[in-house]
Amino acid sequence: MSRRIRRLTPAFILPSRPSGRNIAGDLLPASPRRRVLPTVTATCGTVPPDVVAHATADEVEAEIRAQIEKALAMGIKPTHLDSHMGTCFTPGYIDRYVKVGIEKKIPILIMGGHLQYIGAEAGPLKPLVRSIAQRVWDAGLPVIDDLVTQPTSAKDYEQRKAELIKLLTDIKPGITEIIVHCTVQTPVFSHISGSGPTREAELRLLTDEDVKAFIKSEGIVLTTWRELKNRRDLVKD
Image 1 (cartoon, rainbow, N blue to C red):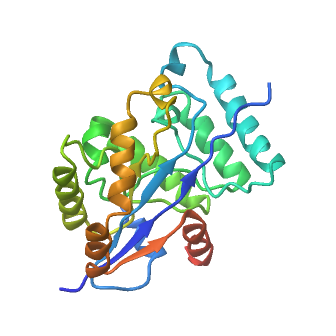
Image 2 (image 1 turned 120 degrees about the horizontal axis):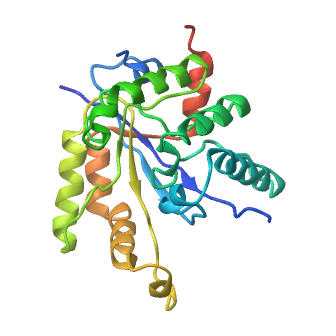
Image 3 (image 1 turned 90 degrees about the vertical axis):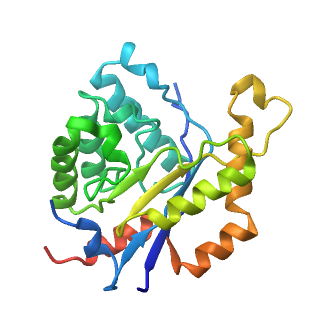
């Protein structure tokens, strides 16, 4: 059976503060099988996951707005908002995250489809996640089907490659975002994070000729959040 796959490839820029329904199907052309392979490169971040111990919902909303304004002041028009390590998915924060996205008409990372992979992390919260995704969709913003937060884990590079290819083979039809953090390590990177080897391996994976050949053979097509927003604008509810 032929497979039509779309691949999401945005890059994140997080500016520092200056002080039920197969929704994805409506965003893609008709096809026997519609799947999305997204890859995301995170360049930097400013909101740590332990922020929940220190920040109120009002402060988180103020931070989201400040980062948007900072990006606009830099001449960058945000294509979407990201939860950054799941921080904005925290109860109390997620309503503000959704609120700002809808108000600004900026797509947000939210999953509302089959939840093939993120479903295990969402657990009993899956119905809530889907209800929030429906709210986002009803507000005129795109929604993806699933999210993969750790595509590979092996120490050996060839094993990592095999893991990625298996993921690409098994992924269900729809729009799935696969998060990667591509990095070329500098002499000081180890002082920032101990994840350098993993990040460098992910960069190598996404530039690997074998991986690129496999993607081509599977019929994977690239897309972006901007394209998803444009397609959502064309959908007649």
